Structures are given as C-alpha cells and as structure tokens.
Amino acid sequence: MEFYDSDETKHESKEFAKKINDHLTKFRNMSEEDLSNLQTQYLDAINNFKTVIPPLLERAKKDELTEEEKELFMETFERFQTIKQGLEDTILLLGHSLKVQADGIFFNIKRQAANGDPKAKEIYDELLPKYKETLLSDNIEDLN
Image 1 (tube, rainbow, N blue to C red):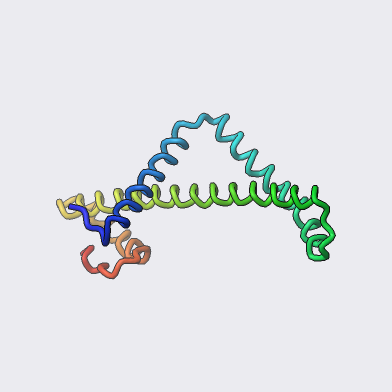
Image 2 (cartoon, helix red, strand yellow):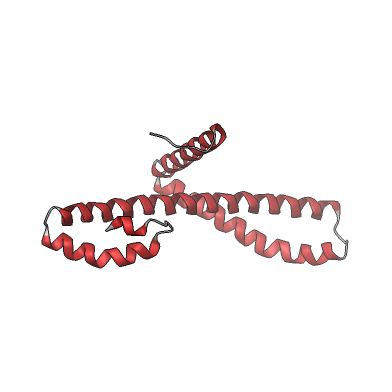
C-alpha cells in the first residue's frame, strides 16, 4: 500500500526513485576504464577551477575582466557546478545504497536472533545501540 500527501508528492517520489535507479545502473555498468576517465575529468576540472578562478575573482572584484575572461570564468563555473551536482548525486546514491544494505543486514541478524540463533543474538545486541543512534525516526522503540 502506498501513502503520499498528494499526487505531486507521489510523482516526485517515483521520479526520484527512477533517477536513483538510473544512476546506480549507469555506475554498475561502467567499465574500470570509464570510471577512471570520469575520475580524471573530475580532478582535472577541480584543478582547473583552483588555478583559474582565484585570479579571475580578484580581477572581477575590480571590474577588470575582459569579455574572454568573463566567458572563461562562466564556462569554468558551469563545469564546476555540473561536477558538483554529479558528486552530490553520487554521494546521495551511495549513501542510500549503503543504508539499504545496512538495513538488510541488521534486520536479517534481528530475524535470526528472534529465531533462536545465539551468535545472531550476540551480534544483534551489539549492533542495536549503534543502529538506534543512526536512526532519525521517532519510532526507535519499535525495533525491540
């Protein structure tokens, strides 16, 4: 059963889920070479940003930029924004993926402990306080 505040929220949630799935699929299907190239592009753009932008900012404060420098500044800034957004999306996706995996492991251990596995009970008792600390839910006591 699905619960949404509105059709708009439902649509946004489904779009976000699709975006996450598309990004994960893209990263999972990338070759080592493609991942390495992507990393190189990110690092090159960041290094370019570090070397080009500070002097341009100083000159921009004095309103001394030529049209070519303004164009270079904007091009570099736009590339940086694209990279920044890509990194933020990647961090979000990885965080979500890790949370899903951690939840799966935790609740599997919890189920095994509830079924009488003494080692699982020991692990569950050790994990529970740490897991509770990570939750942002008001229903922490529902875990017990």
